[in-house]
Image (cartoon, rainbow, N blue to C red; front, side, top):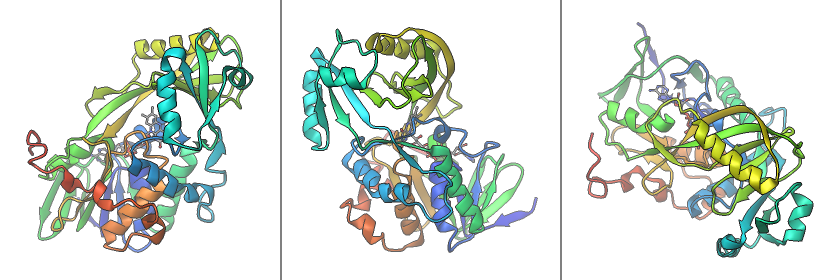
Length: 380
Ligand SMILES: Cc1cc2nc3c(=O)[nH]c(=O)nc-3n(C[C@H](O)[C@H](O)[C@H](O)COP(=O)(O)OP(=O)(O)OC[C@H]3O[C@@H](n4cnc5c(N)ncnc54)[C@H](O)[C@@H]3O)c2cc1C
């Protein structure tokens, strides 16, 4: 086995690894190692593909806002199709959920209150025995995730980055300021390793002899279902205000989810029929429609740090091990800003002025916040 060398090795070719590699490769030799036979097989390929600035912590919202410009005006040749398409969200409430709707309404001045009369115009077949009010979020969009992911991979390749699939990193060793990685098929070395391994990021750290940060993968189920009545393809994304279900059109069918968060080990997640059935039942009731056929169902792992903010930063100044993990349910919509911050930190450059404007200190994302004393149960 020959040793393959680079300046930086990125582990994982999901949206996190692909986006950061696309920037790092402008000035460095970059290798991306992916254990599957195609990039995007895990969480990146299983998302709801939504862009909404009203979702997640303050830091996540700031990162989403800071990413919008990239989505609207990607670099020349990045994508043949628009990365965002108008969708809009309507958050829905029953009478017993009105308090929750009010709290959410107060959190953002761009949300517009909708009466039941407004809702029946916007949502065909709405069951008015249940839903009495809503909030409209017109700015939310669909993301073309495949175009975004491919755009990043294409850019990285154009800059000379090399993507190796079917290369599961099985060991990492640090010696004389150099990381040595083994996949069982090939050997790799570089002074810097970027851990963008999604649900496996803590496992990668442990292989490297580094303390895990305490990531938790939470399974989320999704399905595409055919109903007895055709769905208007232009209908908004509908979201239960208590996050018990969401749905949006997928052609004349519905893409839907029970918005579940089931703790899971890192694995190739799959949908439980009962979870799919629960979502179908709730949505059929709200929209007065009957399911005909589950066209497809799947599940993906949303991966959270203990405080639910992202983990972006060197593990320590000395060892060249960089964390890019814990993007939860927001890793697609925040990818441009996160990749920009991560690459600046990796290269020791100033964070761009544009990102500084969002007013988020990068210390919020530092892996150092998960110190031994804060999480004593976490040991290598
Ligand atoms: C149902 C669902 C809906 C979602 N909806 C949205 C949404 O609307 N908007 C949004 O922004 N986000 C959404 N998300 C979240 C988003 O999909 C994730 O935050 C994002 O995809 C995480 O990307 P990643 O690159 O970190 O992880 P992944 O895509 O999982 O990539 C990690 C990669 O690392 C590889 N890997 C792991 N271990 C090794 C190893 N030892 N060697 C080599 N390679 C390895 C894996 O094979 C994988 O390809 C959703 C997620 C789910 C599940």
